[in-house]
Image (cartoon, rainbow, N blue to C red):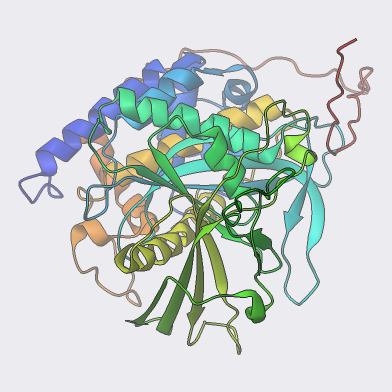
Length: 471
């Protein structure tokens, strides 16, 4: 094989072949059709625009009817595939630390009135104040982030949010499943650096740290610029009566007069953002109340202290006056070196945006117009398997470079789209466990002139409020 041109290629090809075999074993129904559908996505000549066009790819040896039947009636052992994904090579930082990014990407279905479990998804539009709420299926992704500037991530899990789910609790349950799988696969052992979890402002960082307190993790999230936190309560004076204070001085993000001298102040020069000024304050916590997610909390409300970081950059692409970035880290007593590492690690979270764009625009994750969320889940897991194979093959393929594209610095630096162009050449060497299709004749279909007597029910999108049934 011409693309095998370095010493580690044989090992990489073996890992790819093993992953394909394990992925096939995770398919519990319509396995051959689902596997060849994934191969069709891998080897298609351009972006995936519709499902039916994939049936014309030579890797998909079945008809379009079998393609849709595999998604509607097929089966994927999600628990087993999670373990397979956790056993792949996990990227680490220079200190050997694993960093997990979590974020939600929406599969918008505004015109699918007969599709259940849709929620109102927050979507951005061009222009100030143009954000919209559009019905669709929100999916929560967890990926291991790679160090350095790259468009690759290691996708480990995906979970569809349902109408009755609470966002932070759902994220905590998903992260617990992923971390348990990583520990079982041997990626984390006692004495290793704690796993960092990076999320955007949509996640309640202190509550997420509280829910995962028994795991070897630290949480790093962005906070909105209108938040108000508190310092620790001052020491109780001797002889004082009554209940002692639980909170100290207020720290208002939008009011500099409430900011004391920072614990650390650092400046770093970056190629993309210019000078980056970071200031940090230690032992700040939110004032919790028994509302929202804390409703019904029987024990006393905890004091969840952490480190707050304010990052101000000199310039930002597309912005005339860059706004500061506020971060909260669940550890206290952070050093100046750790503060710089934290905000640099948070910027790696934006690599997930490149992954989402590639899944949607190239692999066609949200292109199908599937009715049931179960079929959408199967297609989503197939897309995850496709992306994982591209990641395993990025040092195997030859670069099929367009005349206007830059040559890569190294074969392993190829983008996911350029790896996909060369995957068809290495697919025969990777092997396919799918069996040959059996001869069949198409069904008669609906008789001419007949009408559908069983109309699909309509479903209203939106949250479903959970009620307490205790009597």
